[in-house]
Image 1 (cartoon, rainbow, N blue to C red):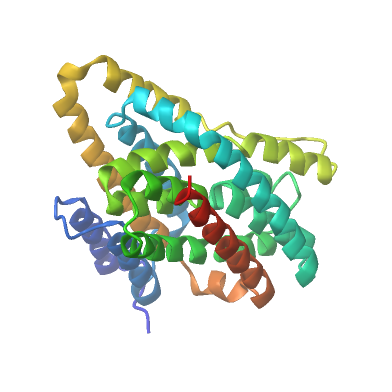
Image 2 (cartoon, one colour):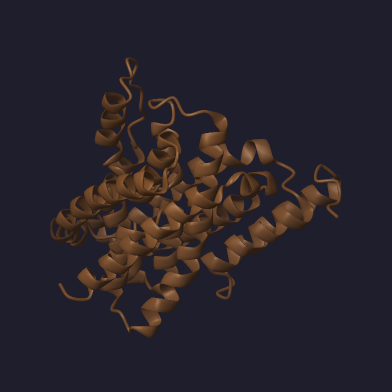
Length: 313
């Protein structure tokens, strides 16, 4: 039985966990941070449930920008040139396969499209961007977010294990994670746990995927005949590029940039804790069997296919 989630004890403990994750203990990684958040939500309850989502959004963006200070602009450009083709292929492939699976299982169109959008682009962020365009209601959004959340957490756990078993290189794992894991936080978390170079590659690949939010919103508006198409451009990507440029232009401050990147990785771990702490039993209960199976099968197919491609290119 949960204690009162709004009690002073619970609030102090909540910040205590955040401080623990922020400390430079190397045994605390992205997966542990997420698990701690999940356990906190299920056992004690998040005392700041209503505020966590907004804080998580901005903390993730600041963390991505901070990681940019530890990434070479030249290296990122090369990664982008080599990977953008595959990003485009897998985004389009995921949208197509997701549409077919939704039809095959007879899933409500809006829910199917939200799950497909979240799988193909960037998880919860894509769902949030396209929801108003396709006029999704609260239940449809909850079902989709619940499905994507569980699979993103699973990716954070499974991908580093598979990468280790296959002895994947840092570059290959970063590309695979960037192509196949849903949420940006889980992509960067898995890549960060795998290695520094992997994090650089995964960040660049994932942000290339995020850019597809723009055409996706217009596609949703066209398919659902939306008249007032609204979307928020992911401006943090531009600041990420600026951070890389500064890092490449001022090598004399490399030690400072290394510290900024370390803080950004800690920010990412705190983000994952907050994401885990946002979980609610109600959200999990709202996820139906068919939508979850569609999301799982779509993610499994894309993960396997992208893995085959990555280890053979």
